[in-house]
Length: 366
Image (cartoon, rainbow, N blue to C red; front, side):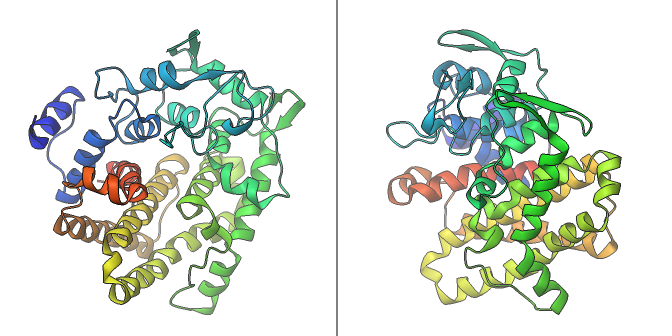
């Protein structure tokens, strides 16, 4: 089936709403087609990020059912990254290096963020499990290691599971005893502050940019924005938002400072190394898309009120993402995915996952 016809038929099946901005629609179409690969559970999870719990795999199954039926394991230890004591889990990668759950608890986090009811039942190779059982498994195996910077690089997805299913006054039951989520999230804010110290200093000094050298938050996947989202999401509770106060405001300001700081570096890199235009544009989709997603969640989940300057920055992020998509179109990137998969497999994956995050971010803005 031709690609455009496939997009149209999938859009109809998934109940896609009508007309959007060209770049927004292009990102949704790309996610709709390429994230539907039933043999790539990581891609399916990203499709759910953009389209919700009703997203379908290309074989007609619900994406969530395809993920659990084909890839969920019982009593998984070691490489799955889910810790001892977990009842269920996923390997990080398949034997052929297809990503399954490269970040701990990404799948359960995706199910939770898709607002699936906790009673939702999923098929597996060993029976059926509910979302509540998956969440309880994450909590049971949780290990809090606040002194490890490596821990903070991988824990953002797990923190989302804990924070989205807990309240500030509550505790979770791990197999080592109860753990208070509010204490964990206070540690997460402190870790975020350590990781953004150089950005905060640059912002206060009025520097136009702080170079990215894999330091601090830039050592994290996706520029640390999953940790940022987890921390900001906890501030949906008024008592947390009030208690964090100026500390939260400072991290929001740092996020907006990053928009121009990183834009300047992308612009310079494109001038200096045009031979890497595909890779650089793909990284721009990652940042601008995650930025829109993060600030949308901040607005919608916490009721955070942006300043006029910050509202202008959101519009700028949309314009930058639009220009980035136009650049990818000029390279024929979206129509050359099979070739890119062979020559640049990481770019291939990024163009799927980050298009879905960007579409999700754009979905939440008028």
